[in-house]
Image (cartoon, rainbow, N blue to C red; front, side, top):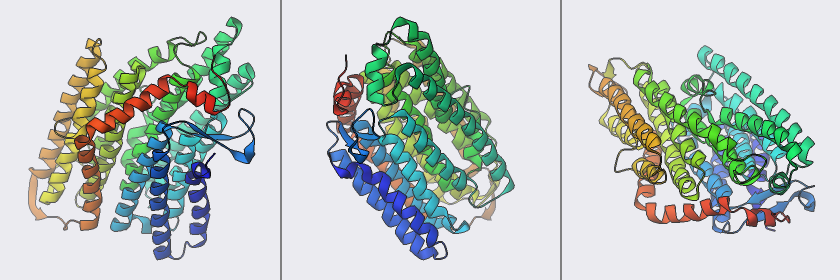
Length: 488
């Protein structure tokens, strides 16, 4: 048992209160905040290197399923690296643009958010998944209203309301699952649900639907996506960029549920969950893609494009095969980085002209280049990783002609949506020039695009590693055994 597994939770938990005490010294806050996030990235890379086999960390040395446990496997390590990498780049952007100076607690809230995210990816039981959800949501409420503003406050209230509903449903689901099985440890649930008598199957199906409903709200799946466009479009640019990983928490939780806790092979549940997820994912993709055609502001266009990318990701996950899961994980990495880049470039553009997609002052060529590169990644055009991601998803769905049509048609709609926005922003302009680009801010956006380029160049080894990850998820016996439990 290595103590490094708990470090991504403990480090931000210790640094964030210290930053609250240092709230009057912005320079020290910046140094400590950046150092903390950089350290998290280093820790995540170390954990990625040792994640080939699932490993257990027992808090207080209490064994599963009685004690609190953290479990490190390939998927958890991947999510930790992706979160830390994104967080570091976004934090550099926030400092470069001065967003962090619009309130005293930006860096403390930022680290609390990272603590919640890291805990959610590492926890081995559902109750602590609920706890870490609440931690990251409380921090996100604070970040959401950072910089104030009436529209932002209204969107934050809506965001809080929907997430409180989700939290309540989550508690109901946990209560029902515990009443039926007597445990909330994920590995223990995998064993006990598979052995439930037929008389308990109806109760566990109700709990499963509640659970998937909660994760669908977190992941913004249709018909539970309506909170996302207003929330993300009104959040500060860097906060919206960090939120690109938030919807992936819902995807992560659903992936754990359908491969470990409630797999389709379980007699209690069968293919019920994937049967519900697949049409919802298809509608999410279609709603997001159509929305990009009618978006009236650039941040709203970014939010709707994010919904479309979530739909593509969930289609791959709902297919529930190792090949489709590997394709979905590759697409998820692309989607997270590209969505963050889109929100950051949208922040740069709206800071220089109106957020509305109407004629305005002339923007620089650098802004145009970054916008179009990001749009290519989001729409899934070659040569960036969005194209490879969609190609992998399509290849894993060879027997699903309707899904092929849907993915290709939605990609076409997104291309039209981005082309309309780009032509308005960069060709339908007045003679008035905007303020000069901020080199550090644009460098942060360019670094996200560089990561997408690297994901394209190293697509072979990356997909090989992700295939091993997906195979491990669909054969969870080692994960269960790491908890000291045995699958039936």
